[in-house]
Image 1 (tube, helix red, strand yellow):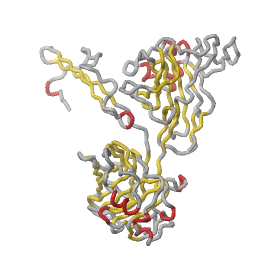
Image 2 (cartoon, rainbow, N blue to C red; image 1 turned 60 degrees about the horizontal axis):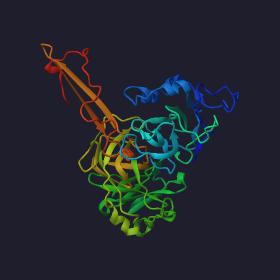
Image 3 (cartoon, one colour; image 1 turned 90 degrees about the vertical axis):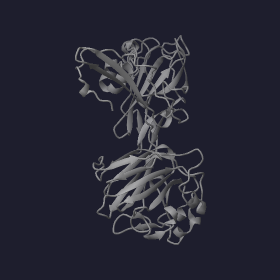
Image 4 (tube, rainbow, N blue to C red; image 1 turned 30 degrees about the horizontal axis):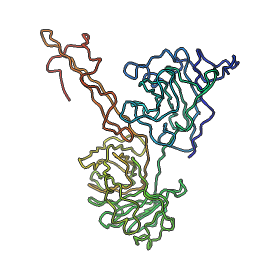
Length: 474
């Protein structure tokens, strides 16, 4: 895919909105300033995060007097379908989270009062919001990405809270920028089907993703030496184990690889070649991601179908028979667990009547899915191999895919409980709950957690009086 930045986005620090189009002295008067009211109306999530008491509670004076910058709706454009879009550092890495233990990314900019400015991702809006923080810990500016629903384009807003030093103080229109320091990254999903495979029972199946120029591949082998059964059956080719279906106790490993040997991928993979372990060949190593999905094609049982999902990150890039031996064995210091499951029906809507659970080993069990359903799941860390195993009922698999999605930011909640007894005595308790995020936010710390009760924990005399029978702790 290609990500294109269309033009420039400039916020002028001068008082008022520098948009008249007529130069005034050294000021070109040709910038992207809009009023703070425009931000409040058209980017309410950002406005709330920056200025509300429950958010960052920043001072709006600078932005009110000087305006904010608003780009065109297609300031960022992407020429392919993506699953995530956000800011990264100049090397493509994730930005540290504001308020966490990791230092920010040096921006090369300096605040007039506060010193060098470092860049952080916001703890609430994630990599959509970049915060520039000076050495005093003050937020100097914020840059927000506001993408379209389909992530094909995005608008960008810039908000400033205090002055930034310019290289030439004598030039009223001397700019500074974040070139080479701040970038944009997109994530995409890769889906594999099995339509090019022949029908039959074999040691393995290997397919390539034609949409990526065959750069990505998927290898499927049975658990404990079981055959992989491919069946066309008058429709799309499906995968089963030892038969057309996954029976209870049967399982298959699905492994993501790069640059598979096209001589041994569908449609060129012959039945004879698919029985020889030495033909399991790929040149680019395994491909790791933190999210994947499986598509259920058919069910063949009156009993509700269920399956388990187990994640692995295998060691190195084993080939041939070594690949078979490595299945289901994690590399040192890796142990990915399933952390979340989402099930979609044949129309792409969240399915009802489906249940799932995750045990202490990080293995997910999903029950009640139907033909045409898609089961999507996330890992606690990157994985390159998935074991799908039947538990009840019978089903086959029509597609598999993986995605590198945006990490989930830390979640922070404050709670207050107040009770009044029959003679008017009132008691108040406050507490905080933090949920550690994923990816770059998985740092065993949650921004916002304080020592003791929250500072705004005060008695609210307007609360309804509660009897003992109305109080619950869950």
